[in-house]
Amino acid sequence: MKVLAINGSARKDGNTSILIDRLFEKLNREGVETEMVQLSGQVIEPCRACWACGGQRNCVHRKDAFREIFDKMKEADGIILGSPVYMANMSANMQAFLERASVVTDMNRDAGLFRRKVGAAVTAARRAGAVNALDAMNHFFLLQEMFVVGSCYWPMAYGQMPGDVRDDAEGLDIMSSLGKNMAYLLRALALYAPK
Image (tube, rainbow, N blue to C red):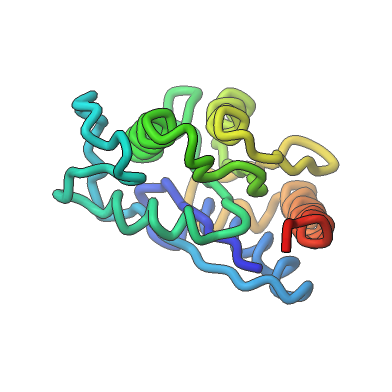
């Protein structure tokens, strides 16, 4: 089993990365392979609405890292989306990425590219807007017929400057719970997967 995390933060190895790493600790203990893709330093172009992705199972445009990341998502059993809160929503790079990914899956609906995969979203917030950002990322999972993992509270932690989320003990506990639940769901689904 493999889980791919996409970190939509503009800061490499910042607060969002710390939260994803907390999930990875729990997943790795359960034997789940993990990989994080960080969008920091990259620009993900928005969807051009050209509809050329129909039947292609990926975007046809090659000016950014979208195609490579999307291929990794198709191979993964689980997907984690992580973003800091910007303007009470996810980052612009994550928004562009998910809009493009949604169009590709819509134009290839019969392929069920993410159907029955497991999804989890996390966010780091300075103060407010985290639930809106989580909601937007979870909508992506639900539109793709994925199973969304729950935790013991909203999967968010507080922190403005890099490393601040380490001081949010409850937020870190929530990430641990989310990681355990994701591992459990992945194992349960693997038992019933068609052979």
